[in-house]
Image (cartoon, rainbow, N blue to C red; front, side, top):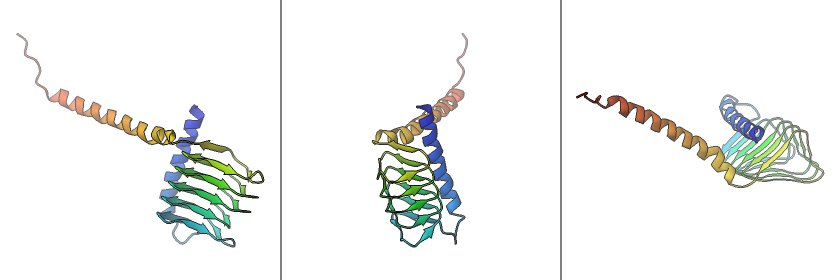
Length: 165
């Protein structure tokens, strides 16, 4: 269980890293969209694909990572992905003869793959919305507890000391 949580934390960190590195990648083949689907055409070659609140449909080749947050990833027939595929709060679907060189991960979603699809890395599917609660709610509760502790310590230091009789 610890290794699974560590892996999820790694993928969340990878998504954050992609967001920061994609901002520096202007003019490259990388694509970032918010609220609008990304479609890679059959003869097109791209780098990293990141989509927030939308889905990614790949019909061509991708030389990097494919990440969708609150959206699905669909790798159509014969697609090659040089990196990994990650969907947070969405599904990953791999059609016939798809090749993925990295890991395939679906957090709060499922991985559906054709038997002819090949994945060089690991396949992880954390179905159900309970994982979203675990990933987002637990850190917020810990942060709230930390803030409450600080407020309590500040209030305690401001109280007057009891007077001895």
